[in-house]
Amino acid sequence: MFEELIGKRSSTVWNTIERGAVKKFADAIGDPHPIYIDPVFAANAGLKNNVAPPTFPVTFDYGTIEGLELPKAGLIHGEQGFEYKRPLYVGEELLCWSVLEKYQERKGKLGEMGFLFIKKVAEDESGEIVMTSTQIIIISETVRKGMKA
Image (cartoon, rainbow, N blue to C red; front, side):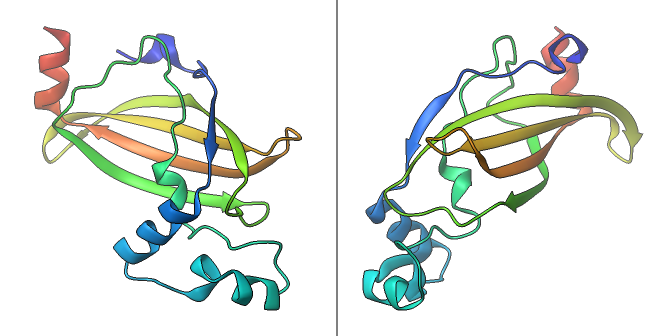
C-alpha cells in the first residue's frame, strides 16, 4: 500500500523556536523548568539561550511527503523517539523535513495492521543535523480497508 513511497522525502520547512511557544509547551507538559523560560538561568548554566524541552519538536512542521495521504482518524501512535546532537535553542531557525523509511504489515490481535516508520529531521542554518525523531504510526485493519476502497 505504501511501498512505492519508501525513501520519499518531504518538502522542507523552516521552523523558529519561539520563546512563547516553548513556555506554553513547558506549561502544558507540566515542566516549567527555568532552563526553558528564564534567560538568566540559561546564561548562568553556560548556555547561549534557553533550550526547548526534549519533546518540543513534535510541534514542528516537517513538510509534506507527496502521495502520503493518511486518514484524519483511526491511526494509532505506536512509538516515538528523539536523538539530539545538541540542545535546541530558543530563537533559532531549523530546516525540517521527513522521510518514509519503511512500511510493513503484520497480523496482530486486531487483525492485519500496517506500520509506517517515519524519520523526521531538523537541521540548523549551517546544514548540520541537530535532531532526528523516529515515529511509528500504526494503521488498523479497519482503517486500511477503508483506504483501499
